[in-house]
Length: 117
Length: 111
Image (tube, rainbow over all chains, first blue to last red; front, side):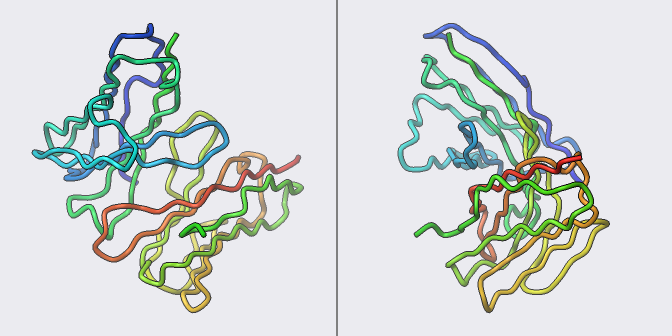
């Protein structure tokens, strides 16, 4: 299957600082990438849909000013958690589908475990 | 009512058993169905991808889709301890970008 690389896999940051997470599709172009948050023993919660060359679409209840998404190219999307607080500690996962985004398999990155202290 | 329902388990079976995992859904417009395996602290890994109704087999894994009943299944034959993980079903409408996930079923295969 296709490969989606997410970096870093783990990060610890101090409260009030910002953290950037990268998501790359290594062997295919992804017009659209998705960012999820996952709490322990729970399913994936979609945060936003990232579109190359345009603004991200955020799900209801997700603060767009806190979770900044940039989709600079067909293979790279970044999620920046700004002014992080302990309640932002979670497992963040990105996903990408093929160029058409719809009607194709979705592949996931390895996930990033964020701990805010 | 959730769009996709999946029993969270936990489900525990002995090694070698046949495992049956299921999801039901309410949206008749769903056309694409996926099963993912997620190990602890890792991203989901795509196991099976099917379109519309029917069966699909890949090694020890078989996916079934019954659109008339709005019911999908994943069967694991000759289960191994390495199959212990959380299994997530996901589905989407034709032309839609987003996937809708089930809650995930935690599976343990006991040696």
